[in-house]
Image (cartoon, rainbow, N blue to C red; front, side, top):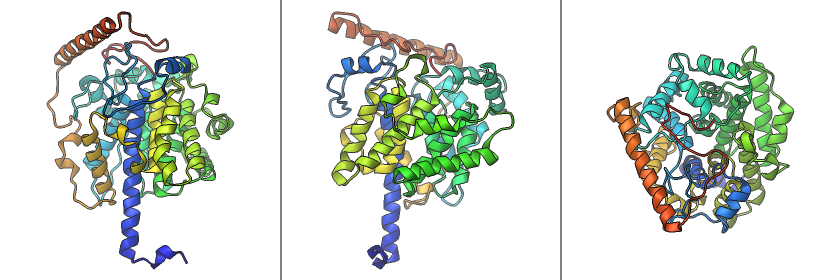
Length: 445
């Protein structure tokens, strides 16, 4: 008999709920931290990242590491997350708005589609931030007639128009929160919700399977069921069984399970994924593979408290220095690592430097309340942040375009000041330069 069983039941319950709260909060904030740190090297090649950040160290507090200032990073300040975290929070806020500790209501495709449209035209309403980083696939789908009424149908029409080729990482970057929402549900319920949320915009089977695997792993690490490499492999096998029996849409191409296995086994490491390989940096399996490489490394290197305290920063830094779609790769990896290592293992000088850290921590606590791992009452209907418009008035397109004009002027001023300070032109990344008004010219997939 385990010595822990000698403890009073109340003590065991307290220990378990404390651990779950640490892991849920760790996953949610870990993903935002990965996104925030990944922005430093997003769209750079590995060589450019090494040149731009030779110390291989990133600090957010008290003295943030300056960005390589180019047209992509100029709209941001250090400590800001990107659209990756915005979109995951659209899902979380939907869940909080409609759920209570006694009744969990998962986001529907229609509700998520509506919130996405608001984000694209109004920004992230609860915090008043601009909708930066809208992808090509998502931008096209959002602008299509009928998207809110039938998001999956519109997404499928777009995908078929690409000859069923497009499989970017735009749904994987947000769907990790499904693993947290479904922590008390059966594993197949997690798979089902994740697949539906992916298909709201990304219907390619590779995108769907990646989201199902990712959400299943987040759920598993938080529950303590995925603690070693064999457990990761087990989730992937169960995803395959679920997908082939009930998850596949009629007429969809078959999944190349051997390709998925090669991506997920981690044997080639981060280098083997070619994360900065030109036009393929946004391929969903690159992001999935990066997250699994880091999770396996964390499991291999986690030998005690000292290891836990350094692993998140060490591994996320190692990942983002490979460049490519670094914020999305690190956002997904951060969700896995944060869930595995826990909130306490996240570096303080990163946590304390996030621009909206209090708001983020507050929503993590509310999620824990709804999931019954933290005491307290919560009614999402009374929390204005969780409403589709975030408790704020709607902004007209004319007003939003005026905001964009002011925003762009401020960014140009920032770049001009940087040029004067350096006495030369600011650097430009070669992969995906530029940014734009989201409903006019999408930037990336």
